[in-house]
Amino acid sequence: MPKENKTRYVILGLLNHQPLSGYDIKKRIEMSITYFWDAGYGQIYPTLKQLLNEGLVTVREAENTGRTARKEYTITESGKKELQRWLSAPTEPETIRYEMLLKLFFGSQIKTKQHLASIAKFRSTSQINLQRIELYEKNLKKHLTESDDHFFYLLTVLFGKHLFQAYIQWADEASDLLAEKIKSKEREK
Amino acid sequence: MPKENKTRYVILGLLNHQPLSGYDIKKRIEMSITYFWDAGYGQIYPTLKQLLNEGLVTVREAENTGRTARKEYTITESGKKELQRWLSAPTEPETIRYEMLLKLFFGSQIKTKQHLASIAKFRSTSQINLQRIELYEKNLKKHLTESDDHFFYLLTVLFGKHLFQAYIQWADEASDLLAEKIKSKEREK
DNA sequence: TTGCCCATGTAATTCGTTACATGATTTC
DNA sequence: GAAATCATGTAACGAATTACATGGGCAA
Image (tube, rainbow over all chains, first blue to last red; front, side, top):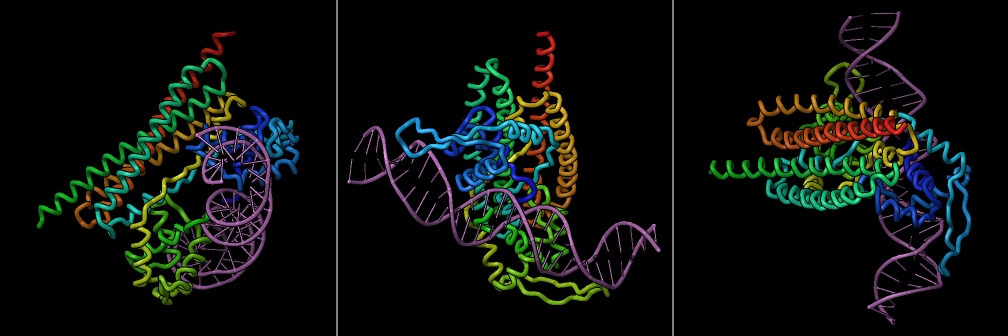
């Protein structure tokens, strides 16, 4: 996955809104964009360091609470420019990998009931995600007029909604086909 | 992306069907599973070497044509076992990354028309993918009774169909919302 | 006093991409 | 004679995960 580090833009994008610490950034990601992007500390802290070296952000020690030293990062002008550049650049078509589909593709090697179980699991996690997304949607629609940010957030939430709905529809269709298959095999006996 | 090399299972899965060369494997991937998995030569050849070292596959020189030395790989018994093990192991929920959504999320920074253009592009590639998928579906349904493999292939194709349909639906919805937004801004003037 | 949350980081490892390198054969 | 296809690989690099390491404050 070389080519262009995208996590840096997640960080720049978040900092563009307000100064944050590495820890905050992680929390923000978990809160709002985790279903289409994520990043661990092992990536956030080194990336912040790198952004610092490039002059795209600045740090200051902030000891709001009596806790451990807290470093707050602020985006610079050239950081804003870099963010802008990325936002305006064309996005390549995404290549997506689904391990589950891979297993299905080679699926004739294992028991049909195993597939049914794993599809059921897939459906149930999709359902949970969908419910969470729909909650986001409801809340966002209330605050839609407050700022443009909410509007764009809503667009990504709608994407998630369509995506998880599609997952669930597929899971139902695939389950039906597999169940039919089992039945027709039993009839053969 | 460490943890567990999944490309090895793609290779094992393909070899489980018939012996192939590295070049063949690439072609097979491009033909059938490219929309949910891909791999370049830079990964296929080293992985084959690794599988060989682990005794999961064997090679033989095959000079069917008068061309360059062609190496044909065959899966071994322990290779089959390893494939089986992976197939039966539970699949973790996939984390998927969409750069496009990231850009939308931070989207208030750039012109709305730019977003409209990139969504239109997204829609059009999705449309092309969907058409290709529907062609696969049609062909597969003709040969469905021939072997179990076709049935499982169909399940993955149906997934792709639902996925790309969802992409298109979202693109339409998002475009409408953006267009409305532009209009309401113009009214403000 | 146990455990959770706040808070920062490093090191090892490995997956995956890109570019490079080579060369024969077939097709137009 | 040029271009496409068949065919195999390596090297460099970078992104991302995982595990490890440390430590204070607060609440039950």
